[in-house]
Image 1 (cartoon, rainbow, N blue to C red):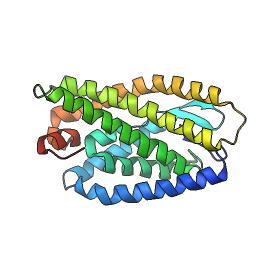
Image 2: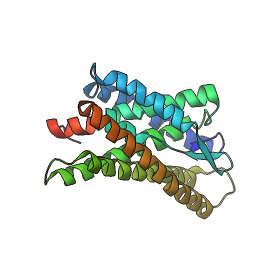
Image 3: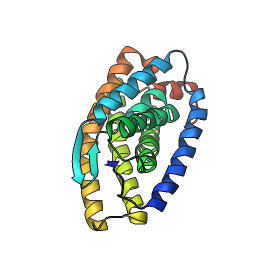
Image 4: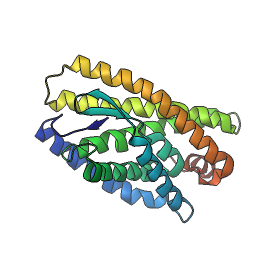
Length: 225
């Protein structure tokens, strides 16, 4: 999933970089409504955990690797805007200090993982949780199922973001059919692993400190999705 320099052309990279800056700035403003003295430490732990998980990479195409993303996990635990900031910070550190993802591709990576992955995972989690909660308060096990599906959907949608960007400004000779097949097939499998990790982590936090899980707090206070 980490794109290196030269996968998409310069104009596409520049536009994506501008979009990423706007998205991160907007998330920084909105994150104030999600954070308090209890959740700030959790946000730091989530960012550290995602950083460690993302260091495990699976090669897909030349210059492109796949790995667990953590977008749905971050959104469920600390909120979508804070989650997007956590992922963006991780990507910046990885790009500048560890050469994991190109500097010119930083905007596209942020869009795919910090914006699309987080938004798709969180939207899925909210929809499924709201649907299940119409009948009764759902148990922790059911919350794990919601988290699993959210992690899977977020991963596949993030991969689709790469496919769209490559279709717009792909700079290599690899065909769109090959790119789409590799990305969707590989990230469907990665999404299963991400869903499992997301489910296990969310259930563990929900059992120990349900007041720290943003999705549960949002549902109880009636905060709009």
